[in-house]
Length: 117
Length: 115
Image 1 (cartoon, rainbow over the protein chains, first blue to last red):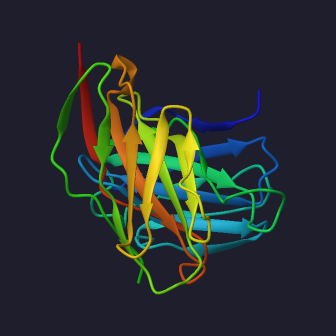
Image 2 (cartoon, one colour):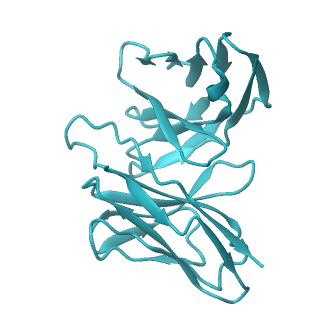
Image 3 (spheres, helix red, strand yellow):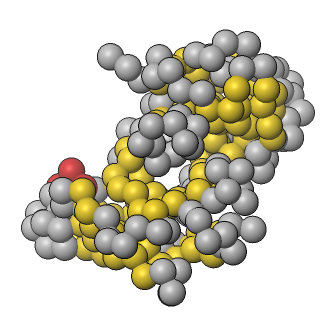
């Protein structure tokens, strides 16, 4: 089945450790995104990428890093510089506007819940 | 800057009744897209419906319809014949060229359907 796979689903981290969240898609989408969601809040964009080997900062990029070495993969690293990393992280992908009949809707993975102990 | 506002408190809805979720937006772009997503307690985001700024008709998808009032900059979601499985958070989102076509999300509306 086509879709987006995020792993791990739950992750616990000690303060000062870097962790990497995996995001893989087999939808052949050019664009990929990472969002952060805090309780009772909407989604805030961390990073996004519209093409391999290129990515842009979103609204809350500080303390995070990404790479886009393959079209299917967009891993997110939460570094020790992120002061409050406990949150729910959602990865998404989409076609680029102008491709087919797309509306630019995002397709989401099931999310990764990170807790810092 | 683009901004999405969802301010309703949590809502309780009787099964089989309709519910309207409010969303207002702010953008200076003439071309934009509006989306509604559903997030059940499991956490995944499910796309429901889309409305383009130049669309002449209000969007409909099964039991979901969008009451699009462009002059008022509102895009309210109407869920007809509520079902227990409709209990979830609902998010309004907007895409604009000014925002590099990224989606900006509102803070969501909580809906609980009661039997």
